[in-house]
Length: 399
Image (tube, rainbow, N blue to C red):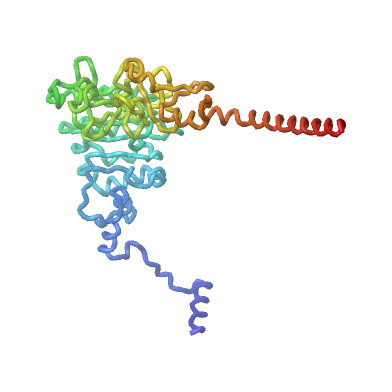
């Protein structure tokens, strides 16, 4: 037995062992198909394309939605144009893909989208390269270029049976050096959308776009179309279930337009003192007024002219309308006598209750003053010690 082990070790060292290594392509097709069932759609396509794409190991998959945000961000960031092209060819994207989202694919120039040329089935292309609830500006800027992508998009919108409904562009294309080509394409894209005379708001039935307006401007944001469901609404219709809230608002953080059925949004806030901007719930932290339940974004919360937030730790917020017009709430606000920060009655009572009958500053002021107080206490202790020594000395002298 030991001799056999020695022979194995010797073969490993001198390289005399068999070089017939097993390749993935040598595995049974059924085993490979089983492996792909554990992968997200982009991963399945990447895996199959890496095996030369000669055999269908992904089964009869539904490729209508291809979102690279479904794979690890690090992997998506490493994908090249050749990788994307291989995937699109393998799944026959020109005949199968209806929604394409290049989330986190920041290594592309755009030439890899070539297999989509002339598609008459694709409805949405997101070239922003960022995921849901992420700011569109990327640093450093990605290499994706108008020169590479716009000819492909032109080949799509020039088709008589084009069904493209929504485009989301890279933030960098708003720069001056990209404008000329981009503006030319935007003009053609608007003309294509305007040729669809039967497009109207699903609520009020008004024809879209409104008179004198465009489907899309050079800021890259498409109007009247929900990013999620691709349904069309005008920019004035309000949600029946939530009065005074637009049916299709645009998030000021991620720059996408969502209907209220696809994404919950907060308006900051429903009164004259707030900024009245819309934000996705998952994009910007909002505070809800403890009385009227209207929302305010963080930027407005920190401004004392637009309401007050309790600094006692409970997180309560009171909007300016409730402070100004509800006299019953005059007792709600308590300010620290040192720093002026506001506290609700509960936190104020807890703060003052620690020393009965004494005005106690807030915790932040106490923390700021602690080093000074500690130094003064140390000095006082030293003085008391000196006084005691002097008293003892006087007693001895009197005796």
